[in-house]
Amino acid sequence: MQHVDAELKTAVGLRLISPGFATYPEADDPFTGYNPGNGENGAVFCHANAWAVIAQALLGDGGRAWEYYSLLAPQKALERVGLNVYKADPYAWAGNIVGPDNPKHGWANVTHITDTAAWMEMAAYRCHGG
Image (cartoon, rainbow, N blue to C red; front, top):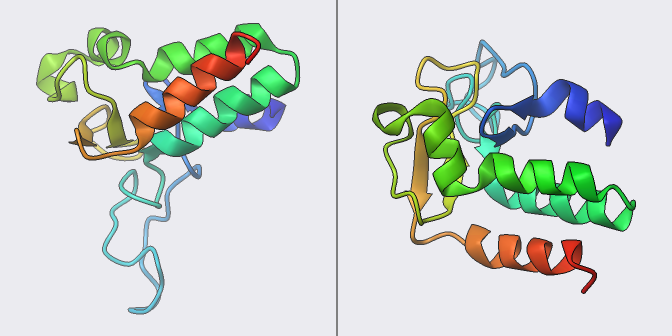
């Protein structure tokens, strides 16, 4: 988890990989079609952030768990990057946020239809000793 904090943390959450792949070697490669910072190629996948919050809570590091929760909280993320970058409602959890390897870093997408809200509720419950 220390490596996660050092290598994957951004201003709006933890990204999946760092850095994103700059090239797409094969058409059947799962990263084909995703520019760096998008999707599985270095975006902030919000479900995984909830799992990181839970992991930190289980490890007894409530401070870092709360930090990760706060990074991804819609209103807080919007305040950090600005509405014209975030482009999503301040009350709706996103499914993905474009990662720092992309010029659109901070753009939240797939809102209102993601399970991130449910996972973050479980994470918050876990952080409070549940």
